[in-house]
Image: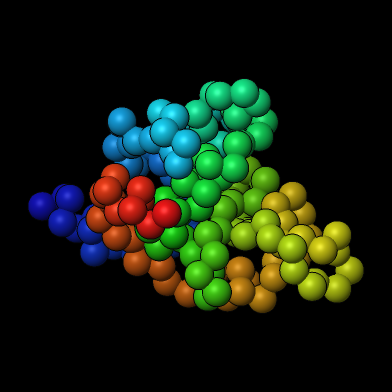
Length: 145
């Protein structure tokens, strides 16, 4: 069965977290606003959800959609060794994952990605660790709040 094979499969660095693989129909953020997956543009847009309320769109997320995007990524096994969600950097090949958080990384702007520069230690480890995807459930994503 193809679905059973996919359940036990582990992503490789050629794969990336994409909401296109999940049915998020009817999913709402912490504010109760319906969300949809980003589409088009760079890979990282397909890794985030947006509600479209106010300025929440592919050029920026509201806090509630950002939190939900992180919960979905972690739920699917895309978390670094510190448990922080990781997303593809802005290169078109998704070769580097970043958490985007403030970190003490010498010679950088003080953040782990997402545009360039070295990763934090936890994200660098992710590249070499195997992440195991889990079965997606809308209830689990919402209940983690």
